[in-house]
Length: 277
Image (cartoon, rainbow, N blue to C red; front, top):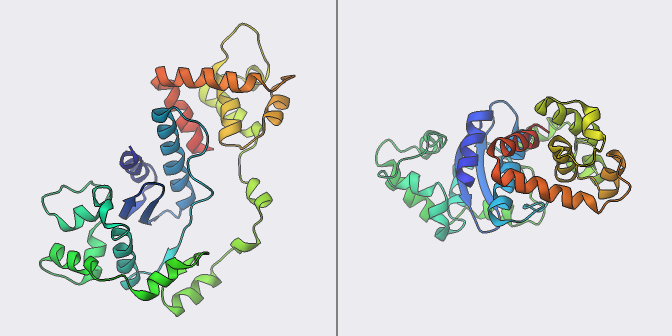
């Protein structure tokens, strides 16, 4: 399922995936984003996969802890070293990493896995798979091991000149962005209601106003997205949707999940809204 989500991200956002490793509680990706859209790519991967995981495991809520960690990597040897780090992490994860496609010619590589660049940086004109296997077999570079061994991973990997240049390109300092500041980038309830109304071709008023005895699915979706995507509290959701109490919201969201399990079109609409918002 995770690999199918990577395929979707490649098709939809044009992300180039050079290496990956899926582990028990996290994953590593080496990617390029020609359209400078890493945020949207990661939101799609984490959001859609979380939905799929929760649906299969009958669970709810966030799957990944906190924001993803991104590192800007210099081309040439640093990118090659990073591919080795990913493929060695750990060796027994090869069935769920791109390593097999690099070293086994008989394995058909997915069309979204870009291997030529890594092979090119290896400088091998012949027997590239054998040479890459030997390269991965060598211990990870000490500098790279120290880099990843730090509790607070630095945002840039490369030469001193590259890091100096990269810091001059920063628009904001991550350390200066508070939790409260990050919260402003989450869509508010008003925006979510507008997007749901557009997707379901209904009015915003019909979503915000409660009607007894009817299954107002767009309203349910807006409540669900307000909690999952917007990070809103039950109190805030109740106030926005004209509810006197909060205890009906989990019940409503539960009804929506049952519908999504049985109606694929509805599920697709919700997943689309999650990615768009």
